[in-house]
Image (cartoon, rainbow, N blue to C red; front, side, top):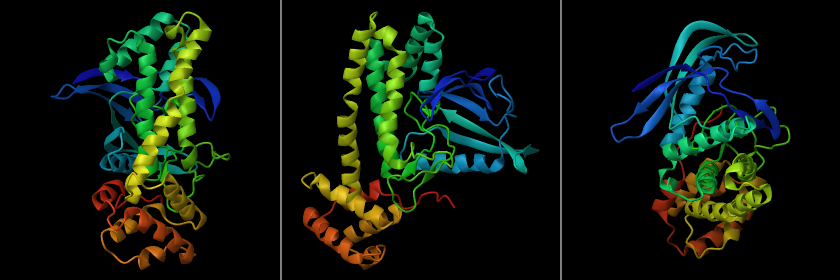
Amino acid sequence: MQALGRIAQAYSGHQFGNWAGQLGDGRAHLMGEIITPDGARFDYQLKGSGRTRYSRGGDGLAAIGPMCREFIISEAMHGLGIPTTRSLAVVATGEAVRRERPLAGAVLTRVASSHIRVGTFEYASAMQDPELLTSLLDYTVERHFPQIQDSKTKALSLIEAVMDRQIHLIVHWMRVGFIHGVMNTDNTAISGETIDYGPCAFMDNFHPQCVFSSIDVNARYSWGNQPSIAHWNLTRFAETLLPLLDEDTEPAIALAQATLDGFQGYFSQQYMARFRAKFGLPESAPDALIQDGLSLLANQQVDFTRFFRQLTLVAGGADEEELAAQFTDPASFKIWFGEWLRAVAGSPNVGQMQSANPLRIPRNH
């Protein structure tokens, strides 16, 4: 274990699509690093530990409710096999935190493979210091992407590697109905881990435009918009690395754009593979059957998790009547269900469905 002291990290970011300038850890302190016996390196950080130079008028404290919520949701994400920062502990401080009313204070200990964000690169880019940007690039590659260490186009390789991890992450969020809520660039970890659990939640009734942030009035960060926002954030990330791609701006942009153009195809491939597993469908089944199934859930406001768990039970031999009862119009469901039966040809991949469909999720209530 290496102790670093109390370090508050600086970063910048785009928040709800707008450039917010310099941000930083306003209520968190990076305390040190832990190297595991197999050589993996992790940061450990205290959240709610008091004011920093980036607190911007805030008190830097946290209430026990939101900290316990982050503990529960982050550990659920880990249990569901989704890349995430982890919550080691929540400790009550015994002091009151002043919000609309006094609340019990707490400090959360968070563990992450690092706290490097897209916003970290935006901060380095805004400093207009090529040596700082190169140093950050080299450190990030060494820490998270050693496989591209010897790449002759390291900056371009990093964009591609970060894009792959972001696609992997967002697809996993969507397969369990998770909505991050605030996918700002300062909340996007380069490592591809879920970070900064704020107004996040797992969906109850399925709807692609479902949001869990009271200030997200335009549904920018809804469940269905998460892929396009990930692409937008990656574009901001690529912009920070343009000086390292080529001395001339136009060729640099062309290189970055060519890599980012691969986002939609690879995302669609991964998304359909995950949802094919959720529905227990073979590769020969048409993609339209998946889209029709999701549209049916949305139109009839069916609980996302309960539907897929019950469909899994039906695939294992249970009667479909309990599944049909989840729909306000069972007749529409039975039309789709007949198509599903024909697609699986009487032998759905039950093991695949059991792995893809959670038995339990943390419910927002």
